[in-house]
Image (cartoon, rainbow, N blue to C red; front, side):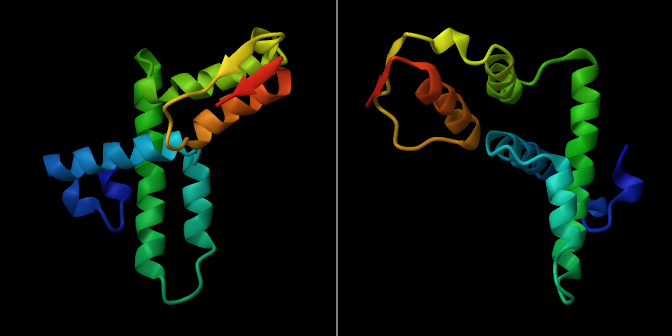
Length: 130
């Protein structure tokens, strides 16, 4: 669907390996809470001389938005589960963690999605240890 509008990646639309890389990039954008609009804005704010990077960011934004539109018509992306949980926690004012004692163990780092959930824990849990 997006091929006619792509500037940098139009030749890659039939390349299965490239499609897999694009889907992996979309998954990373989701994990780090980067929506398509942020990619688009980043591309438009680059200084002169970065037109190729600007085109790549515009293409990624378009591909990401199209993927989201197609996917959410009938399916749920597992990459969106933590974002959905975050929304529910904000709407419930973190009630799920109220008076709970939480211990985090065995993590080397967290994604932005995970940090947002941890923020709810910090705000509402009785204690949070690691």
